[in-house]
Image 1 (cartoon, one colour):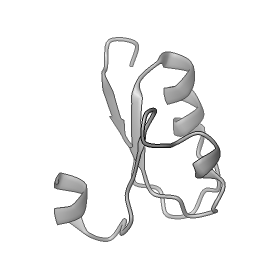
Image 2 (image 1 turned 45 degrees about the vertical axis):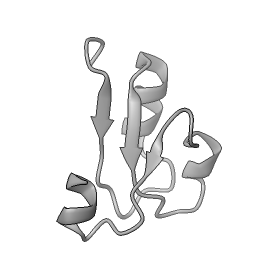
Image 3 (image 1 turned 30 degrees about the horizontal axis):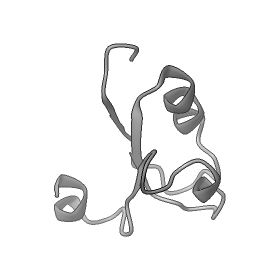
Amino acid sequence: MGKSLLYIVNSISDGIPNTLLESVVMGTYPIQPNPGGSTLVFVGADNGLLIENPDSILEIKT
């Protein structure tokens, strides 16, 4: 993961997924949903992107 620029996670059950914490520590750009409402602490416009509808393959692809 240390060589990755993006880290896409599609978790619909975790408040702060371990993968988000790993992404922040490794310096990658996380893209993931916000199921527990606490992901906003780490993910904002400059340091990540939130997936609004984790069931939509088209949105994740876009």
